[in-house]
Image (cartoon, rainbow, N blue to C red):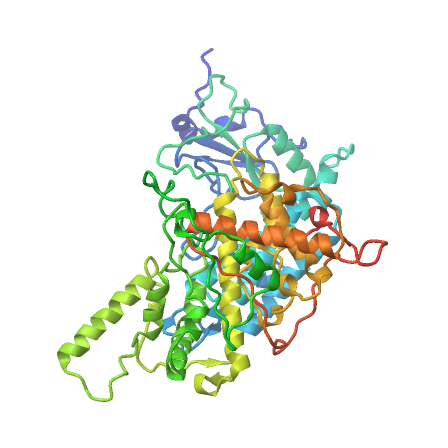
Length: 613
């Protein structure tokens, strides 16, 4: 008797051949088929399911992943009840542009009411993850951290409308994945490992899974998870239910996306390589002391960082690369002007660009890196073509318009289609509800403090991204390092450390009480310990600090940071500052372990065991 032909062509002509092993009335097993189908998009596949009533097209390709559609969905309507807000995307009517006075138009925020409903749904998932049986599972912690990071990004980061929809969709995906992971380990895993032979009925509103493993198919079938078993129809055996290894790991025409974590965002690119060549017979290098600008409108530098700046050699020969550009103007630029009118011109220019420049910090955009003097020109540039009181000739207008377009293209390189610079009907910029001529000294100092704080945080993240290499280390080490970086700043997340709030002024690294700023300085010390050539005095495993020991460690840490930044970026970094007056409104002081020693005046460093959630 000739063997039965089970090729795909034969099965299409004679589908009844798949029923030769049918056993009506007997209980189905995971490898049996309640229904089935042939799928030949990339390879002839037989798809069977023991507990579902419909066959879905499987995800194929090198990684067998479900990819996002153009409408930011991963598939058809997903059953998300009772989390309705975890499915709907922002609509255009719910999108509010950040600042009508900003020259860079496009970035905005989600309507507050809609965001709060969305956050409430996500908070339910977060709360479940904090109380469930697998709350300490590493995957649960990672997803919870990602969810909190995305929520902060949607809430505080100006995004274009399409980027907002994308960010919300990713937040929804993470929330649903976290909820599914918890449900799998708390509900379905006990069913799988139960000694009972009970087979649970598949839940129709459950997403289910595809698999090439008969063991997985049997486990999911027992637990009541919809499962679809994939098998190739190219069998060497006439038995069509013979187990096969599944789809080839590489399929021609499908991109092989790296599974490693994405590279940390680097707003400051490393420019040039190698040390500068030195001529023969050159005299020994001279140590140069940097000039510190002091002004009543400029927030003062923190004492420890000011002292450290004088201890570092900032001569050009000490740098290993040419000076890099700046993603933001230096705060000193605003106070080193000749007149009050010039100051107001610079403030107007910055406030008109502020929201848009902050939006460019969101990947995949990059802020423009401009020299110090170029920033002065940019902030004084007549974007609105309104400086002349007399009507200029057509040639003058065209020339100025060409310059405006050239500078706009420089700012918006890589994102011209999403973010634009507009000039007609541009409103006068405001700060805290005041127009620039009405700002008092405290208001101007708050503007410059925010600018300095954002610069400091972005530069720290850039330097860390350059000096810390996760090559050869485990994913756990990289996650631990990101956790340490997140502990340096509010909102306690390294991905969004540059989101600055005025209530953060004079807190954390800028807190005048040493024992209250100690947790943040110690977290920064742990970050620096992963950098090359870290001084041994910072690597010492000192757990308890009195005031003198802490102040000494703080000086060493700030000195090492300034020296590293100058070597690798070619100029003095922006240093943290404090407001000379109390912030306009103070937020709640974050709960960080400080007074945990039995001895008064002693700080115990618990950074290694602290969680940033």
